[in-house]
Amino acid sequence: MNLYRIAVLPGDGIGKEVTPVGLKALEAAGEATSTFRCEFESYDWGSEYYLRHGRMMPAEALEILQRYDALYFGAIGLPGSVPDHVTLWEFLLPIRKGFQQFINIRPCHLLPGLKSPLRDKGPQEIDFICVRENSEGEYSGAGGRVHLHTEDEVAVQTSIFTRRAVERVLRYGFELSRARPKKRLVSATKSNAMQYGMVFWDEVFLEVARDYPEVHAEKQHVDALAARFVTHPETLDVVVGSNLFADILTDLGGALMGSLGMAPSANLNPEGAYPSMFEPVHGSAPDIAGKGIANPIAMVWSAALMLDHLGEKEAAGLVMRAIEDLVLEGRVLTPDLGGTAATNQVGESLVEKILR
Image (cartoon, rainbow, N blue to C red):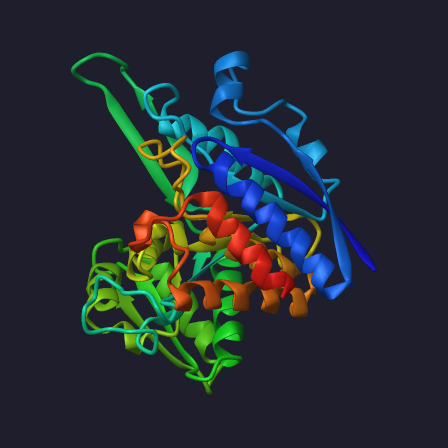
């Protein structure tokens, strides 16, 4: 039996509410398959930790987390108390960059039984996956401000694109596309306006595409691609984008799934040199935090992505089938999906289905 040590980072807001549901799903999957078990250790880092200590996590956080096989993260953010750029730059980005989690995967799949905001599109039309460059680009942190608090104040934010990072994310996308039935890939660009960074991105895209003649590859300006998400999602299979472009597009993709409470993600170090991190896309949702009505499905789906990454394919499949069955039945759903169930009721139903 495989043993996995999982660092649990519930974070803020509804992260604390959906994380326990995900842990119970992982335990149920281990019990059902008898192929693995998990040892969980939880850390209370995040915005409340910041308010107590002046930092989002301790200085030795990465040293602590590096000992684990994977990281399971809920949500971060406490608007009004901690600035958003602090939560991102002092929590999420140090983990992603420090552990070289340079690939971010976000599936966009409308499950049977759910309604998308797109009235004429169903599960057959909304089924693609986004691959996000997760280490540099627009989130490189290069820049600064001068002449502070004067009428001459200037802020400079510089995007950085390296050949190594651009090529590896594009190649990852092509490999993924080659293994999927449609074998289609779209690269998000804006090279008409960004004549250096995005022209460079396009050049690398064309170079890599030559190695995958079986994949139908195209590039599209990100604004037109955003419209395509809404008008023709059935034409999408694998979408690859820079840190910022893919971040924005994937939130749109989550909305197409019926609710951001459905959208999972994986921050991957494909080489296995560092632990990867798995998290829902929905954020801390302070407007519903503490009400017990947060949708835990994205958290549980992220657990399935973690199991798949760890090589527990059977368990990952069990978790996904439980999610699919629950949604298709439509009896135990949270308010964001039109139901009346509480977070823990959805969790109990999912665990029951996994064990069954």
